[in-house]
Image (cartoon, rainbow, N blue to C red; front, side):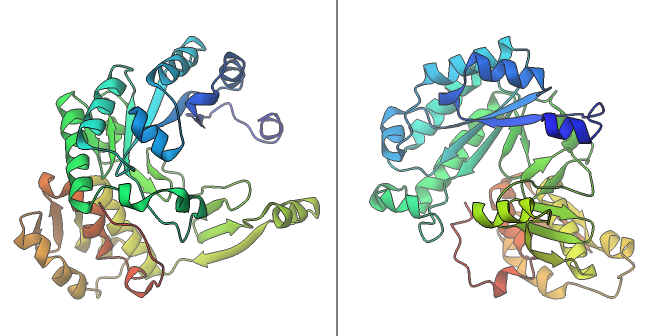
Length: 328
């Protein structure tokens, strides 16, 4: 931060966030964060059941999380985010419900509720987990629905696909004003055209497209020491890419999109997206989506399927040979 502060004017920085592991939070650490202007902290909690924590090799009792948050607040950092997960080994619906209730007592400003993605072909350490202990797809769906029901009943506003926020939090305010944005890091209030990633494998977004740094430390370090950019690949955005990205973002953020208005904005009125609208018809038949002319609206009951609904406009997904986790 000292290096950044010496080279950039950070006086107008609206938000400065850190992601922390509750097990390693100390008074020295949080005091240092307060000194450099950190305003928001995100803590990975996942689940507070002992048997689930044992299964995933991450032991952090509720008291550890509670103590970490107390230290953070004592340092003057009051914007607290908490990440939860469902679909973990040996996890039950009762486990996610209990965790949601305990976490609510800590009064977080935001919660992100992610489905565990079991992709051992991409993350080798996941091979250590017993696949037979993973909840089945129906159980995952039940867990997601249960935590969503609890959080909304407690007054948290649902944000897009997997976030929940205190109604007075800036994310909830942005959602109500249709100013919510989404990038490859998730939901945000940041509307900057550029996102610069530092470090190995970091992804950046510029108005022209995406870039990514070298993923191994040796290549990254050598490039920096040689006074070169560590960028190893990039993707320039076409007009079609930008239109599709805008449609997907509006659906993911606002559960609706006037496709015709987006096309007009890009002076691309000749595109009809007939194939994509046809692909949405099963969601319409199931009562999750309404289509009126060029406007797509997702009903509240369709929120759990939002990723699949938005993916109908992803031109790259059908041609991708990569294997991904389930959508729910």
